Length: 439
Image (cartoon, rainbow, N blue to C red; front, side, top):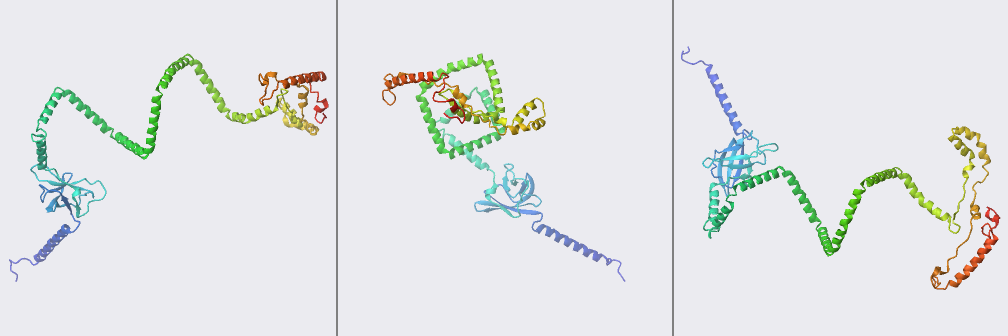
């Protein structure tokens, strides 16, 4: 029989399940908290000093708390600070730790900078050396520096003889009433600095170019020295000839004025000449192939002309080449074609003329005509052709020879005139002038 005050038997299993659930939750929480790489990461940093920094101080990023300082311990000449921060917060691998002083009386905190913008992150348990940490300037250091400056400028220092006081008095006297000018100077200086800031890219490029020029000059030092020496020599020479240069410049002045007046007075004609010269140049450019051919063939033609000229008779030796008559049909048909006749029919009709002209040699030597029409009447040099003493370049007297030669020439001239009324050479016969004839 069951007592009415005793609990039901099913409440004991439920109570046991609750205890087991609570124990499991505690174990999971402990694992999450204590498991490496969980919700927190640890960092060690060494500072030169840690005044006003205590365990529990904030660890911040951009002023927002992400962790706290766990310990502050001296380590030789530096201070070792242990920190922990939220593992979800990414800190760049090259981060620095900076102790920040908010006010003179409040606690300090550690700022991790810079903010993460990509790349590697700070690993768990990283140690930052002193070179990657920064501490603020202490008030005592500032006051000590000011105290030292005050002593250096005071009666025991620079103002021991009143020099600083006199400097201040002179400065006050000089600056008295110059407030507007000083304000304008400061304003202009600010404008200049603003302009330089806006053009800092160009200034940087200019400095870089100057660096390259300086490097090039340093690499070519010997050439620069030679150039300087040569320039010095030229300057010395110009200094020695300054009178001549002055005279030349004085002469050049009127010449330039005359040229200016000439150009002004004839600018219309000069413009026309320039235009015509442009036209001539254009024609030469268009005919450059023909001009080149002429320039290549003209020397040969002139040389042949010089060889063909006979200075004794004053004539040109020519040879008529009538080889075009070896094909009279084509020659006649070309004339007929210019009048509108069909060339093929003309050549077919006149083809027998080519056979008839095949055995005729029309390469004629007409030089005999030139010989028949040429009068050879050489003029002997006068008696004084070799100077007043009648001596030639060899030093022998030639006056007698000249007189004898003149008489012989006169005699021969009379003989030639009486023997040949036509003015031809008496030593040649008419038959010898023709091809194949005898002389």
